[in-house]
Image 1 (cartoon, one colour):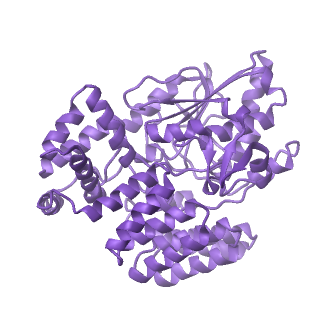
Image 2 (image 1 turned 90 degrees about the vertical axis):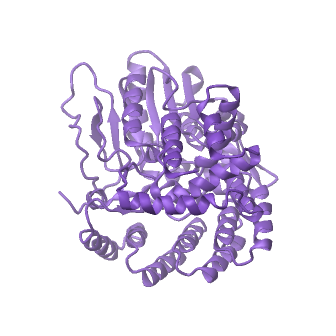
Image 3 (image 1 turned 90 degrees about the horizontal axis):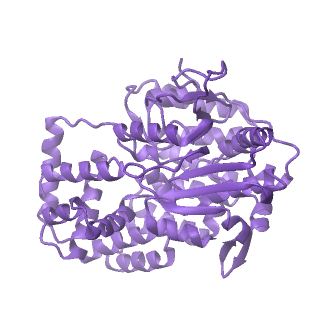
Length: 517
């Protein structure tokens, strides 16, 4: 496998899935390819490339297996409190009102890149809460993903504790029942959602949607494929239909015919109507305002509490952290970088048959991606029995136990990882999230302060600490943390990438924090 073949693999995967493989992820990507080569007992990477390139059933089956390794399935119910508040208080009521006015009680919503189903089921719960006579409506909610293993779990509607990390207990108890340490979704809600495997690059899209959610998906895509998907989304929406993506996910992108609407908690993108409304803004992306959408007092208090303005960014938790770092940047590689990559690939190629213990860890990661946590734990523990000083093994176990809600075990393995490699910030962020999940805001603040002490240039820690101070209404300290972050950002090149909220350009993060024009 030479550098040219590597680039061919990267292009093939981008053309088939839209996924962008960054230069710093090349080693990890190659290891995943070698895992599949070994399991198939192929003689060379060229043979595996030919399998993927061929258009037959064997190729389709292999793509499904490779996609499990390449995609991230970390998500949870009522993710992004601000956007859920926007949906509950503004977007969905507007759609419902227009449908009642037109005497057409039909709403069609699509969660694109739904992973294991938490997002479309969250939409279904919102609809049930907002429409008292929802059973008299035609409610169509579609969840799609390219990962068939994730879709299988979504259809089951069974979740562990970590999927409810920010969900109000009232909503949880109303729509879920506990059985053997797992939570089973109410059958009525489950029946409101259909799931399908849709590849956003090569497949046709469902049409006549009132609302499309595609959050934390496009951040993984090549820039030209993002443009393609945006156009396809536009054509699949009804007039004045809405598209919602993750924050900053479309910064710098050409939005085509979409009009941008600014709300305090998020930007949304709306398909135009025949005559442009003066409230629809131009294609440029403005700065987010620091406000909170008023809570609809007529809704049940349990729902109001579950999507309040309180925000906890999951910046360090397991695959979510990984999930948040792929952007469509740094596409051109100069010759010096190519020489460096060639050296790395030569080194990898000299060990074409990976050692068994390394395969154990990669298999554990694959099981983690499929949310088979207990099986992944067994693999990871066996790996550590062979490699007792391996940082990645302990970090993975910490992430696995956190996802199972076993925080004492997760904390133990975080500390083990830190003891082995104190120069990595990831275990500290996981400890922050564990503290937040347990309602220990003081503990979360202590860990963030420790990150700042150990890694004084770790800009996301200042931002996160500021957000916790804001939750506590400590405005002076919140502003101080934000200003420190802004001062450091303004000393960096505008095009540098900060690993925050999916990986974001310095210039874009400055605007996001309200420090730019």
